[in-house]
Length: 273
Image (cartoon, rainbow, N blue to C red; front, side, top):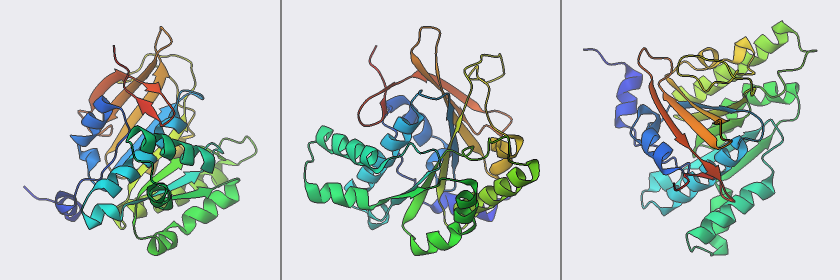
């Protein structure tokens, strides 16, 4: 049996220390290939479901856990948040971090500053900025070599406009795809992106019973060259928040896991029933 160079590299790289804050989801991701570097995760859901809360908690928890490790490798673990949706305000990141440290009985201001210094926020406000930043992402990562987690919120921001031509959208999609795949394969970054879903229910295999508001150029199998996992957030028939995790979605036998979640001042968590 042959093994590719990328598979060999993944086998010797340590696990990336990702923590969403939901025990069951964290356990599923930790015991899958997603826990390795070079992984891709797409988080999708309708507006207001908790996507921003999830990635805020994921960023602050993952950064905090990396600081707690004794390993120098993990202490140098930093995160890039790309806010293309206008939802990731610096004060929200700080509030989530403060709540996390208070929950952990860690109120040292130096620790808070150390945590926040490892979370880089880039704000994107129009398609031109979107294309420019991703065309230069490789140069940015050369300067910020400790960044090993990239979160884009959201991949469809600034690309849903009626005025944008099909060719223009395809060009931007290729720029983003090339940049993210390069960040994953060359710089060993884990990639997480969010996208919106409608609330219209339709039956589909392994579905979240929702319709993705994603132009063809930005569908998961278009922007990711690697095995992709998805985390779909929605409301169930009782109005409770539900999450569907599909691991290795592009494979012939994806693993599907369904659970419920709720949100708090840090991010999301697993409710006790």
